Image 1 (cartoon, rainbow, N blue to C red):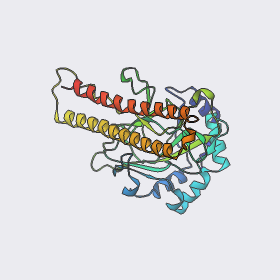
Image 2: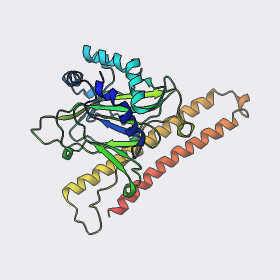
Image 3: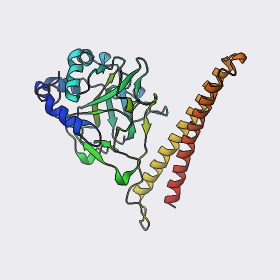
Image 4: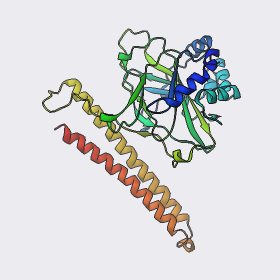
Length: 328
């Protein structure tokens, strides 16, 4: 299903991948055989609100279908291919990462559709397949948009450090039909895209892609981190918001949107800390009294974890405070 000349160019693509900046990645045109790419678009599932719940439980403008075999017979064949030795070996040849394993659980991968108005803040992905314990190593994004104008937003952006916008280095790629962007996933592989703004009457009404993940049983020691979920960095305020600037209606809407994002993440982390506290309390009750001294070290470790979680919430609150202070 991968185009033959892509495999033939494996050495060239692997070299580009290994030497890319801000982190290892490669952009490959005409990645799939043409008939395969066309069928993937033809059978792409309709937007499903039940598959569009975001991290806060709200129905958003991004739908993810992880159950490829149920979409169509074609997607069932595609799903089989994505766990095959042929596909995995090809991806190892293209990236230079040995021992890649397929995403047998399809957690978070599959078809991704983003409607007009959707954006994706810079983030690093969850780092383990919790069912297998394997390390997440590669994201492969195959775009299925027959036309796309960069002015519409939605271009995948790879960042060196989105927390430092003044010194951030980025690489950006438009989501063009049958273009693949593959990149390593680690603790600094920040990526996202800006808000989609498709004009009325355009031949496409959304941003479509296939999202495929690959894993390994281990990874370099200096890249290993404790298991975590997806970490997001809300974007900074627009550069136009400086002293002396007269706010427009668009500016005010943008500021409100940024504040709402910060507020959502504050609520998210507060709820997570409360959930962790409840789970730890349940575990504490289960521990026998005679194990008090044995488990003292464990309890100290858990207390430290809770302090760190609290510090995250405080830091987010302070950031929102700074945002308000900047725009008085």
